[in-house]
Length: 179
Image (cartoon, rainbow, N blue to C red; front, side, top):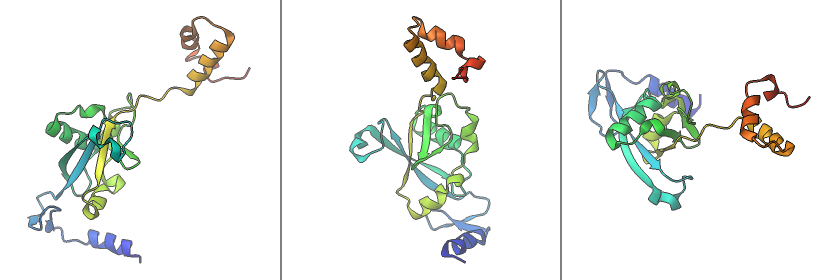
């Protein structure tokens, strides 16, 4: 058995009647939820690098230590605390996207992804200074066939390229590139 498995077993075997919070060592009852502080960095920059720190603001919220909070929960708590339009933000944990990544994606994705899925509470207990990053949702990705048909229309010398592409969209010719 590895040291990590022993740690996992110890976490499972923990007495359910009393636990301690991440911020204090005072015992709490099983009816109370144990919380940890989640640091959130909202960036207005296109890249998350230290030289752009002046384009970032930091907030802290309390989340359940068991990781049951979803991306939507985190965004709601941030919106209530900082007054930011949380529904327009993408939540990231390092390179992992938690919830929606693009504009136009179903909002239910935010309700599906939990912090536990990415082991965030466990990492935060070891490294409480680590932060999640929030940035504006990326624009929806373009259909790769759109670029191909646009280039074809330009090559053919078609005057109304947008109309040509829109007329092809949804037909069998949209994905059939070779005739």
